[in-house]
Length: 379
Ligand SMILES: CC(C)(COP(=O)(O)OP(=O)(O)OC[C@H]1O[C@@H](n2cnc3c(N)ncnc32)[C@H](O)[C@@H]1OP(=O)(O)O)[C@@H](O)C(=O)NCCC(=O)NCCS
Image (cartoon, rainbow, N blue to C red; front, side, top):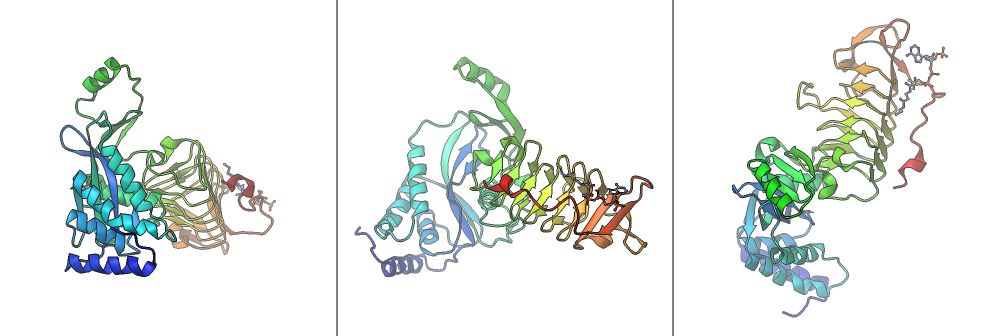
């Protein structure tokens, strides 16, 4: 097929593809990935080299043509012929060099992986996943992994795509230096791998892999890859130190220093610092129902913690833990539950070392906290 040399030709090809699909609806997000299927048939992981929001019609329509997708949230295990068909449909667009073609490059890499040695933990598959609406709940592991990739590649911010019930959709997996393995039968497998001369390092047994084994976002530093789960959203300029932690569907929106814990669902604003050993309560186990956020230019001091949201320009003193029910003395002397102050700007929370009372003071200009050290965030 001759190449398309103008955008008009690509648009015409796109219209033709969509017309041939008939009654189809462009998805909100989609991607092709490489999955590992364990011996019992469970999907252990999926790597999506190029997840997408459906900002154009051509590529999702090409993938729908190859897979038979028409609408809604659906996943497909693709045959090699379907992958070839997708590549064939997209290849003429390469002649138009003004736009990049990352999906085509990724599809070629994935196609070559089908001819390579299978992974040690099971079978290798190329899969396709379509999310009809970002509000649709995850339907299976293939779909769940696309959502985690959308978050970690920063195509969507935390809470930008539904992850409702995702724990129930993901498989618990033995994550090793040799890839993912099923938990059932792993000891025997470990012996077989050793007999083959492999040094087996188990990084964890979990439903979520380490983010860096799947996505490497630009402009971030992560001192210990085991501390950031796939599905974390780390903005440019974020530094996660060795004891920092970031869960899935959570993370930073701008430059941040993370030396404490960002629990699932928590969002930290630009210019904020989560100090060493600090804790931000999540909603998964024993936390409240409020999704906690930290505004811009905040400091949660070392070993401090919050179960309420902070507005902009707030400080929680080192060692001061403010839960939703903590009774706090406000600047005018009244005592309120901390949840009443949730989201307020410009407050400094301290635990008075003389009285033990937790106090919220209006922030003053002469504080020792004057924002992040910018040199630490030129990542
Ligand atoms: C809360 C904090 C920011 C206050 O620092 P600051 O803004 O420089 O303020 P100061 O220490 O000058 O304190 C202001 C006033 O409050 C008083 N104060 C501060 N902490 C107090 C406490 N826990 N109990 C009673 N009074 C306290 C000070 O004595 C001072 O009183 P003064 O005005 O009469 O002199 C600081 O104590 C803190 O906890 N920083 C955390 C740093 C950190 O952990 N970073 C992360 C590293 S990983």
